[in-house]
Length: 387
Image 1 (cartoon, rainbow, N blue to C red):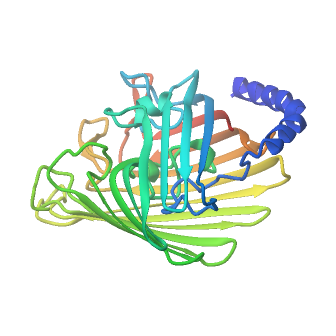
Image 2 (tube, rainbow, N blue to C red):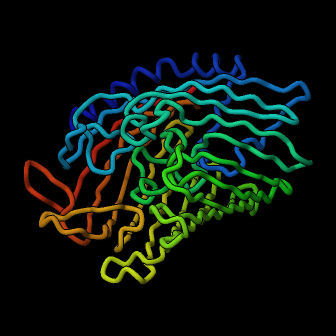
Image 3 (tube, helix red, strand yellow):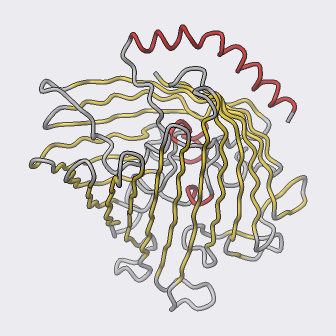
C-alpha cells in the first residue's frame, strides 16, 4: 500500500505541473475532452453532429496500472476474474489502442485495434487485437443498419477504464458479454428515445460456437438532461443444443444521473435459463446481480467515488464451473465494495487510487499462499490518457 501511495503522489505532482500547458494544447487542437464515464455501452454511440462531406476521426488511448491482490495468481499469471488490471504486484499495461471513426449522413464506421493485458486476459482468443470493427448505412431517415464486430452495449461498465467510474470491473460486468459480432438495427426516434433490435453469433463470442444465434432488444430513454435509462435483453442458447433446450434470457436495466458535482450509476440484471438447475435439470434456473456507483466531484481536479455490488448465480448460468476448497461445484454469491479517489490533471486523463473488497457468501473460492478463503482484498493504482 505504501508503494502505491508513493507512486500516486509522485504522478499527481508531476502531472499537475503540465496541466495548464496540456489543456491549452488539446483545446487548440480541437480534441474531445469531455467526461466519458458510463458512455461506453450506449446503444447508439453515433448520436453526434456531422457535416455533409463526412468526417474521419483518429484517436488513441493508453492505460497503465499497478495492482496488489490478496488472491494468488493462476498458471497464466492472472488472478480470479481477470479483466482490468489482472496482474498481481506488477506495473503493467491494461491497453494501448488506436481508433478510426468515419461519420457521414449516410455511412459510418468504427475500427479500434488494441493490445495489453485486457486483450490477453479477457478478450476473444480469435481476432484478439480487434476491439471493434463495424460499419453501417442509413436505410431510412433515423433508421440505421450496422454490421461487424462490436463492443458490448449491455450493462453500465465498459472494457475501457476511462469509461468507468472505477478501475476495477464489478463482478456482474465480468460475466456480461464483452464483445459481440452480428448486426444491429437502430432507430433514433428523437433526442429522448432510441430503439434497437440485434442479432449476434453468440452471447460473448466473435465466432459462432454452435448453430444458434443470439437475439436482442434495447431501448434507451433520456428522462431529462441529467438522467437516462437503458433496458437491454439477449435471448440465446450457449449449449450444443440446436432447439433452444437451454434457452437463456438475460435482462439488464441501467440508470445514469449526472450533475455538475454528482454522478450516480445503477444497474440490475435478471437472467433465466431453461433446464439448468444443478439439482434438477428439467427446471429453469435464475440469476440476479447489480451495482450502485456514486462519484462526488470536489473540484474540477479531484473526485471521490464508491461502488457496491452483488452477484448471485446459484446454478451457474453465466459462471460455468466454480469450485470451492472441497472441489465441489458451487454457485457464486458475491458481495463487493469499492472506494477510491480520482485526480484529473487534464480533462482527457485520470489518475486513480482505489481499494476493493470481495466476499463470496457460499464457500472459499480464492487462494492465498496455498490457503483457501472466501475473501479478496484489492489495491489498484491506474493512470490513463486519450487523445
